[in-house]
Length: 606
Image (cartoon, rainbow, N blue to C red; front, top):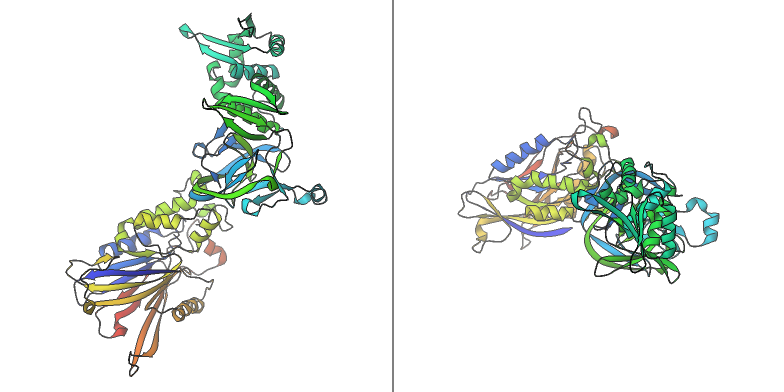
């Protein structure tokens, strides 16, 4: 709950009458939203100088992590709805569908780090885990593996990072052709000479590998010669390379550019052949395990993809000043044990997470790759979500950022009347969305964009009407230096988005009456139940000398909604529950600050 201080409304006339609107439950983005009704009320507020309003509510991994698609690694903003991505089905990695992308501009990340593993992840980001105890895995096979959020990881858990893909691609590339391409993109070259003629070759200083190249690629070699340093150079037949490229519908000079896509779409045996060539070209054994070095770019990414598809786990990498990255191939298992991890809160930064059909995907972060899970206004993962109820303006790419999309829309709705806003509440839909989608801060962003007070879920605040020399009433959030308290009148407001599940008028009023009995205020405003109701209450007390009885009048209103219960060609949540038709529009309170009788100073209009 917030205690939101005072607002001052400067006005000129003694008999001025003001209306304070409770604009609640817009449900922007739903096809059943009566946006025309909202605009009509907004225009009334805008054109009435004596009208003001309160808004009543209901309106992962770091950003540089990449996802493995059938076209190679992609950043979140490069993804398309038709992309296939690699996921884990409980046994192996397989290609699956991308359903959406979630984005958060500012989220707290945890650093998970060991000697061979490092990642930043949110509390609710999920991992594929198993149990480190072999007996528990054996006797409870049905439980493992399973998805567990970062915040719920225990020391007996181990995180799965690698699993082989046994699916063949659709490119008709032989093992020898893949082996040739593996050498060309690592220890080879593709260059253009004068008259646009191509030269393709391979250089190899290791005599053992040079003999293997000469033997296996004999049909592709047009010339073999030794350099002064003893290394072997092999010129490769351009027509034969073109024949290979024609099967992939690319040009020879595009091989390096397209190598990630090639790797993802060749057969299992062809991937084995290419991996063998690339490791022999740029790999070596150090401290009992293979290392591979390559400059950042498509070739390094292609090798990492080959490791992923073979089920080889990649350890931490090192990068030199010349952008050459060295990665280590882990020879022990596919897991990292949580007991070996140091976990700490690290930074706030933008994050994203995809949603896939299998609920998992392959990430690349700092040249390290691994399997991970998905992240978890009514979003498309909510049980109440119905795609038929989503407004036509919502695009596929917006499904992962519905909260931001809808909040931006609400900002545009309120912009014309932001100078008349006493503050904005948020509602149960925003609260749930921000909590479960890890997108806290959407409501704060909305208030900042509009330049209005953030009232949270409920708030107390005062509205002080002060007479002064102004042509039209002006809302201020700072007191005038020359305020004359003899010509001012203050009203205390208690505002709450609303609560409860009552469908009867009596039940809805009961909740309002409870609020009116809990708090010391003159005006009470709630929403949530999509109905227009009101209640006046009188408290009897005594004056400051306790010699005379006085009355204190309280007025409470429940605002209507802009969400239709029944709409043509739309099956709404309210229709499924059998709710009564909604009273569309906002309720408002009429205030006469200078009225002598306290009872006449406040009245409701619903």
